[in-house]
Length: 124
Image 1 (cartoon, helix red, strand yellow):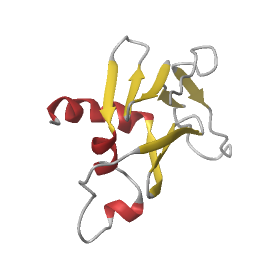
Image 2 (spheres, one colour):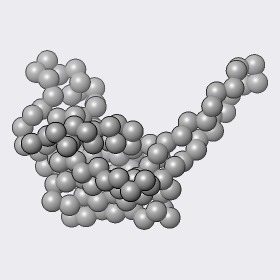
Image 3 (cartoon, one colour):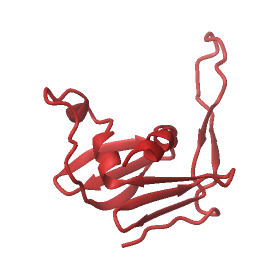
Image 4 (tube, one colour):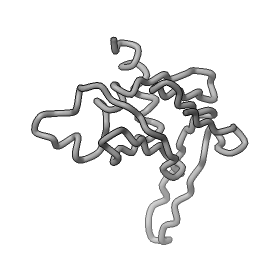
């Protein structure tokens, strides 16, 4: 199963302006870097960024790194067992919802996914 988004559908950088009352100090806009290509193939998630860098993340690494509250607060820590990605869905403009077999609450921001690149290179 393969999912891919074209550059025209999701630009690599999205600028989000936040509405605020006039009495508040101005806050810079939030910039979210999005990948230009997302592919799920053979239980690997591959994200290609505007600068050409590819982040190749295994299902096991993603499952172990799940940022959801249930995984973060689990007394036994995060799951380290084998994992299978069923599908990937956009989560607004800032990330992806990764649905694993037996676990569907993981929303991964694009910033977090990119930060996992170094860990993925060290992961066996």
